[in-house]
Amino acid sequence: MNPGVAGMADTRSTDVLSKLESIIAQRASAGDGDASYTAKLLSAGREKCARKFGEEAIELILAVVEDDARHLTAEAADVLYHLLVVLRAGNVPLDDVMQELADRFRQSGLQEKASRSAG
Image 1: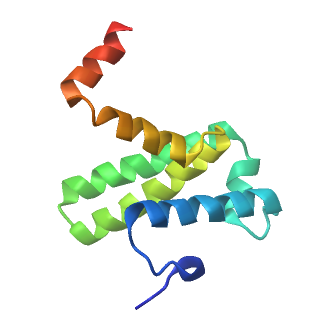
Image 2: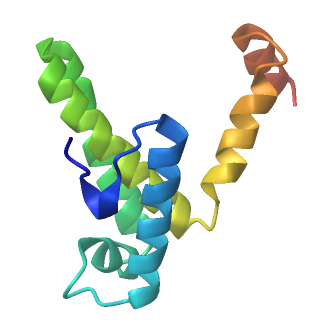
């Protein structure tokens, strides 16, 4: 078993995302853009983080079209990482996003979408 980043042997989705969020926070606090890509990205500002997330999202879309599961998996991991960086840049904790998703379980997707456009 390959533990990956910082001993991330547990592959349950929320555990992995929470650990990654913690690593991003640690690297952001270190503030050393020379030693950490994450710190460099965050120090460049919210716009740079958002642009990078957009680039990764486009790469994900292209991977879907290619019908290559391995490439799609790699790009999805990049998107999740950059999403967490964007959340950090916007001061939104992952727990807030997870709570929002949990709250949406109470209604269908169509109901939830209608409630957003009505208000």
